Image (tube, rainbow, N blue to C red; front, side, top):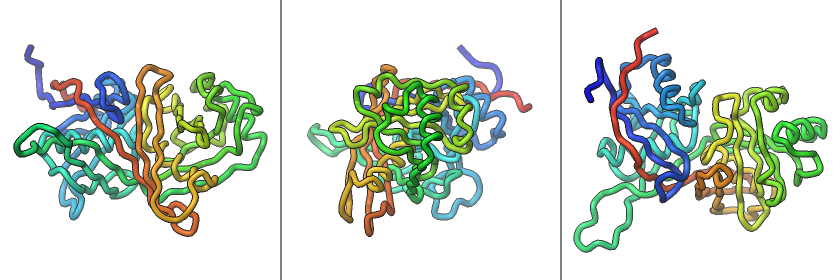
Length: 310
């Protein structure tokens, strides 16, 4: 079938997983330099995935390899983890950028990305196929909120009682700020959220969403809710994992200066299991640099019509 009018190429990939039809699906649209913001938003609404990424080459970028714009079905984000990881993988896969270290420009600033070479046991020269992708976060931050009334309202927003929380409520991030609630692993599956519930918590204004996690347990898991930006529950949220590893340092779950790693699982409760490896460098007991990594699996290629200019 031939589509009428101009079209753009896209790839759909599953991010933070090594299996198709798991992890977080992402549409990466190529060649969108001439699109307006409204047209990009229309394309993202048409895909209706948690995010759609538009890697762009616009003007002189200096030491930056490309610009990335990221849209949910209803809004543009300054930064997000799985679109950054997935877009870098697609660009390397299509040989538009080299495998290795890259610089990405987004609303959160210029951030480092590193595409690893996929390891193979096949004889002969190894093909330069991209493998795991590392994404650097912006400067990490973590602050505790001591208001018990806020804690109760935030717990209610995700369908939990105040007594079910473990520890204080924190605001953390490394490019995007999230609100973090610690719970026992047996409680994690009972969490849920609605746009009305989160909107009722006025203190969440300006935050990317609400994270319910099991930091401190043998398996670190998180669930991320952001229905106010069109994502009721996200299968894999690299930006939230970056904040979680900053929280791990702030709360003493990762101790000692130097390099630490933390594996974070997400998405099993909505049938999209994902796995993220987080790294953090600490100095004087504080997180100073964080990054997140994951695998990427391609699942679809095609062309989409360019929306009309409105």
